[in-house]
Length: 164
Image (cartoon, rainbow, N blue to C red; front, top):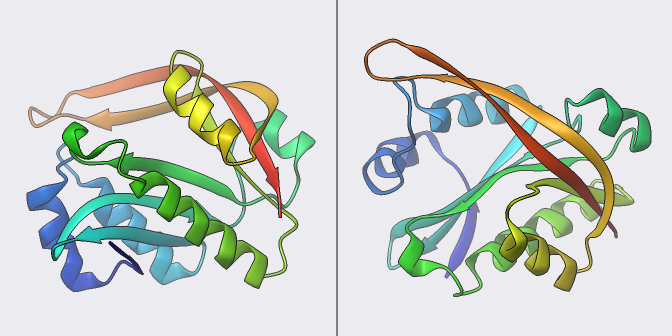
């Protein structure tokens, strides 16, 4: 497995191998934030195929309660492995290790991530990797489906933090 930063030419492969819901691809938005310098978009590769991704948002989580508790803490956002059959193969762990390396390289003392409260498997993994429970918050987001309908979502989450 190989971890790399997303390149423009990777976007088409991401859409083919890791499709995400909505008319506009979140991959393009993540890549655009990387080009602007506000994020780093990481990809995990296996046999020349993208199998996982995450984004490091250098300004941190947008939730005000998280920002108040952890100012300046970069956030791992959108950590995912595609598809489910590839889970439990250390792909998420490899992505998080690279996030931690990049954050430490930038002089960050902590890194954090949000996990849905109804996802005990992910919470257990993050806890095993040294992330500790910190701040509950509501993650509010929206997406537009192929028919142009906007769907609003609110997920009950817990922000977890790791000291580097």
